[in-house]
Length: 227
Image (cartoon, rainbow, N blue to C red):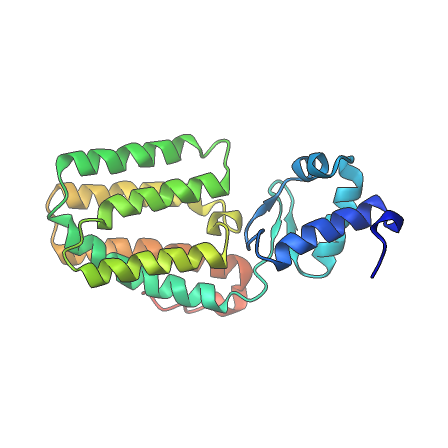
């Protein structure tokens, strides 16, 4: 075992970040802020940048210009399965809850969406994802089928373990998402047919997966089924 006293600062930073990736403290999509890491380790950002480059070479970290570094999705198979399942489950749960939502519920959901819009300029994926979950929770919480509700909440929890935030991979999807939120709200408050509400909510979820696939797996994204 290597004596930590003999490690260079970049090696220390490399080991520190890598350990947090392998023990899932830093989940896929987690944004790696060099200045924050440097502060934690009481060093400049230079050795941290070197460590991030090494992790990028190993495929554990992805760096994009004007976006920064985030933990890579090494094996995203389970994430893709969960997103497909959630698009169907959440679309149905939202439709089943629609007639039970009050004007206050719709107003609350719209307020959350407005908070999301307010975060678009200074975008922070994790905070945006948290608000996104709150928004959808308002819409499906009154689902008349308790088993359906349990399945939706289970898939949300599963996604939390599989990745930090999908919006870390496709930040441009955020602007489309908030517009689609408003479209769903309009359908609900105008008493649209439940089939239309279900389709809109389902397509909204699957569109996020589509954006991820186009970004990460462009060859596989061709001819994606419209869930």
